[in-house]
Image 1 (cartoon, one colour):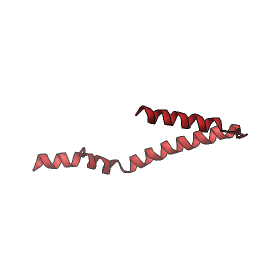
Image 2 (cartoon, rainbow, N blue to C red; image 1 turned 60 degrees about the vertical axis):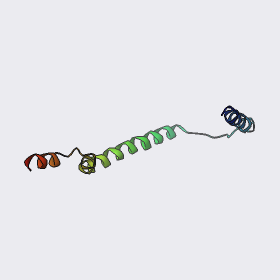
Image 3 (tube, rainbow, N blue to C red; image 1 turned 120 degrees about the vertical axis):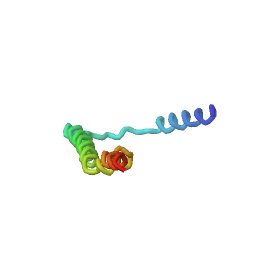
Image 4 (tube, rainbow, N blue to C red; image 1 turned 90 degrees about the vertical axis):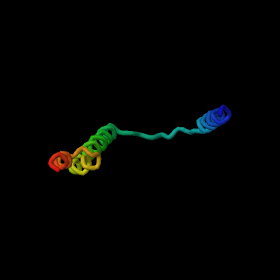
Length: 73
């Protein structure tokens, strides 16, 4: 186990030593775009949960209809 971790450590530093500068540029709008993507994803998950909430409750066994049917039977 120790030799495997040592191998990963040496591989990481070998690859790091051969890295060259990327000369990449991120303009100020990039952060805003990433924030929009993250917030849009959170909103999409919320809408999906809202649309399928009844099916999720039935799958988890928390449906009110199933409980009331059991009591009347």
